[in-house]
Image (cartoon, rainbow over all chains, first blue to last red; front, side, top):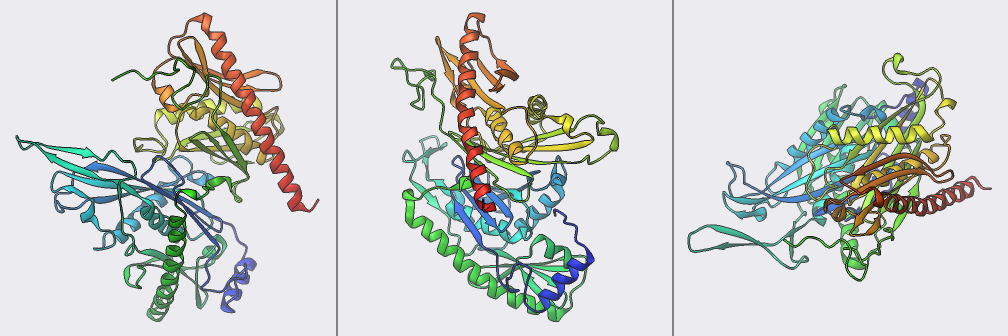
Length: 291
Length: 245
């Protein structure tokens, strides 16, 4: 992660504030920062989204390409994740500096999406054992302001919601060889159902309490964090503890309960924003980075 | 497959522009709060983001620091979803290294590095969407980012590309026009003096046509200069308004 240098006095200030449910920017322990979500920012992708959560800026592009299904799942397509921690976020990520963090985030995303039912992979199949859609989800980390996992999972969900996969027909001729025909109409496409796509909620333990959506400074004061992946219905799909310190079992249960509550409201607000954007359709003004 | 007609009989290019017409340029400075300087530029469908960190102490071995001027460190990176075909590695390949060297050469001509001895200026450029004239978009975005960071420059550095179709010089090439394989030139220029920081030309070009192509590129640079200058003024107005002047 991008590092920030804090003095002992600043750390104490943050820790004492959190005990009183008052964070440096005035939020409560369970409040998210103001988030901006916009989809369809990059035009030569099948779907894209940009999420700005405080000073954290993430851009996700989804490209749908045709490939062969995996041997153990012949009638399903699959997702491939790639996370690029660009040097824009901090000079430490120059060259290969951002690879370690990138692989950590990518492996977490793989774990979350490996659970059955998060994305309907059977709808990505074209021809069992021969052709399927492979969705390459590429995450670009532009600015690092704390709470990367949450922002990335929100962006991935928004980008998958925005993804439009062209409809294909399989034509079989007399010899039995199959030909794939792409539909002529560019608006004729299939959309993914993202109702069960989980979002990550990171809970950081600071002192005796835990906070949601930590800034870089707060992350520097916390010893241990719990990452949980929650679906919109409140089901927990994945859990991971990160950090040098240790957590006792009561804390973990408390954090899980908070995470579920926060996660459900996060999904509700995200879905509202995505539906609003969808309802505006082509009349929507695309702002992107120019706003 | 029929060859792509770069310039139709009526004088229109593949995307409907005239031969000397540029694509729509929109720029914005100060996109990221945490970086020292940042800027975003859109030239048609090409989107580039530039971020500057510095001047700061040289990272890494002390021997890299120069005693009489600053070291300029550049990185050029293309997002994996920026091209029509997915790109596997964002940076680290030969093309990115070459582009980074070009950017370094271009900006060492413009930045007053003697004012910042023993320090390092980092310039990171990211292409979010590639639709031709990538180098030019990078240079334009980088100029704005350096100005946003408050680093001293001799002059704006504006870049434009130009090509040739039959006898007419085309300004500001898009990806289709670049891929057609004709001669193409990229030019980075300091508009005040007309001095050229970088000139690059690919494919065969008859020397009689060279002047026309160079002039088209220089005209593209000057046109972009007007937009960049307006972006800087707009930013200055924003910042002074925020300061409460």
